[in-house]
Length: 410
Image (tube, rainbow, N blue to C red):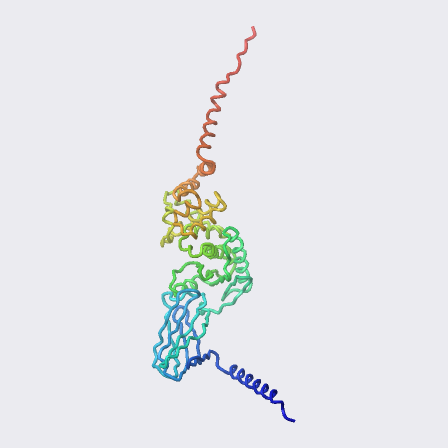
């Protein structure tokens, strides 16, 4: 029995399609064909904070004469690396990008692609690929809930879960005041020792410290050793660093204009557990008349450890003073800086007072007469003066009311 010609043609087309699909599945990963250039391999690897290696293999009908790798961190600026190689119809080359000095910020996704051209004028741009750039000196485990991801390489499941609970609660609590749009993803990296964290930051070309936030990346890195004291440190360090992320979310491009006393003061004030050292430093500086002018704390804090601690203590105290005066003060201040205000200009715009005047009131509140001066600031000096004058006149009024004379009995 002969086949229907239409059925035969249909069967033939089906076989061709099936064959093409099978061939496509057999092609090595990364193969791209266009304009005479075929890419047969395309990948990347790195040694943390040292170098990133980009590899590509391709062939063409004409000599491939140029290969440029383009890469960027997150949504950051693009970097271009011109590979050095001998032109040929088949190439297998690598380009090594040095990472010393913080060329690419860690704890982020790196996007990369290649731009190729050959002697016949053909060009090829490979599809964008991404690689997670994190501290691969350690093997990280992840605990996640919602948009919060906690990454650890030490400790047990309870350790990671505690950090996750603290982070999620802090985001809700802190954002209750700021009302900022939450980041789509927040990564909290827990280093098991301060040495491990410091080495990571130094290798990445950043100043070392006990913790650090990368608000533009939605990343927090902290050093919290597993153990009995871990939860207490989590309640201090994680809310502090997450506050920086939310301040960035609230101000966007204006984040660079937020005064350091506001950014760090708010972060310190949002710590769940107080740091007694701050209060001791503040009291000693007030007693010895060594407080740092707040105008100075608009800029980065002093490098000296003792002065830096005082700067944190003052900032925390001043921000809490503003909060006590006006619960919406912080939100209005951030709105002013998001709109382009200067340090002192933002205070005048949001608070209706100069930074200097508010600083005088804050300093007065630190002393024994602070309660009286706080009253004067809240209700107005003339009102308090009127009350004092009235109190002063009361004895005079009673003095004029002499008791009636009584006759003596004879």
